[in-house]
Length: 297
Ligand code: HMG
Ligand code: MG
Image (cartoon, rainbow, N blue to C red; front, side):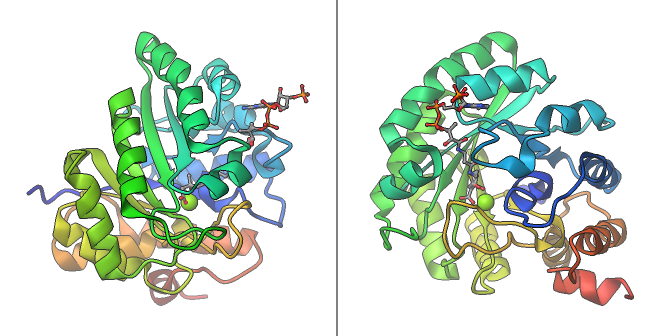
C-alpha cells in the first residue's frame, strides 16, 4: 500500500459556495495562489454551476483566469451539465468534476434532476472530455445519510459510484455531505464500494458536522484509501444540504497524516497561515484545531 496520500483541497469551491459573507474575486484568486504554494497537488478552484443556484461562485471564469497555475498542480472545477462543461472549457479548465448523489431526493434538491437523469447528463460531458483530453472526477453525495431521506442504502452508493467509474471518471469521491458518518460505518461504506471500484480510484470527502471527520478519515486510510478531500480552515457546506457544516479542515488532515507517517507533500505551517488568513477574511476563527494550535492570533 502506498505511503503517499493526495489531498484534494476543495476550500475555494466547497468552502466558499455556501458563504453568506461575500468574498471578492481577488481574494478567491489570492486564496488559490496561497494554496498553490503549500505543496498541494489538487486544488478544486471553483464551479460552473448555475449562478442563480450558487451566486457565490458566479465569478468562476474570472477566478480561473486570474490564478497563477503551477505546472504540477491540477485545478479541477465543478460542472453540473454540458453548459457548465462548455463554460469551464471556455475559461481554460483542463480538469472537471461532475456530481450526483446516492439519494434521489437530495439530488433533485441539489440539481433539479433524479440520479439517473444526472448520470445521463454526464454522458456527453465524458464523451467531450475524452476527446478534449480533460480528466473527469465524479462525486457521489450523501453516501452516509441524506438530509431528506435519512438512511441511504449501501447498494445505492455502490451503484452510483460504479456507474461513474464505468462512464470514465478517473476518480470517485465519496461524500458524506451532511457529516453524519462515524468511523465503522465510513469504513464499511468504503469497502462496499471498493468491492466494485478499485480503491486507487476512490477518494473520501467528509464534512465535520459531528466532529467525526478526522476519525472517519483514519478508518478509511486503514482500509486503504489514499485520496482525501478537505478544505483549508474547515470552510464550507452545501447550500442544498440542510444542516451540512464545514468540510474537514485540510490542516487537521495534514497533521493526522504526518502523525501516521503518511506523506502528502504539504507544508503544514503555510497551510495553517492560509487557513487563518481565510478565516479572517470570513470574519471568524479558523475551523481547524491544528490551525489554532499552530498560528498565534
Ligand atoms: P435548472 O434550473 O434545472 O437548469 O438547474 P435548466 O437546465 O432548466 O436551465 C435554467 C437556466 O439556468 C437557463 O437560463 C440556463 O441557461 C441556466 P435561462 O434560459 O433561464 O436564462 N443554466 C446555467 N447557467 C450557467 N451555468 C450552467 C447552467 N446550467 C443551466 N452550468 C442545474 C439545473 C444543475 C444547472 C442547477 O440545479 C445547479 O446549478 N445546481 C448546482 C447546485 C450546487 O452547486 N450545489 C453544490 C455543489 S454539490 C456539493 O457541494 C456536494 C459535494 O461537495 C460532495 C459532498 O459534499 O457530498 C460535491
Ligand atoms: Mg462537500
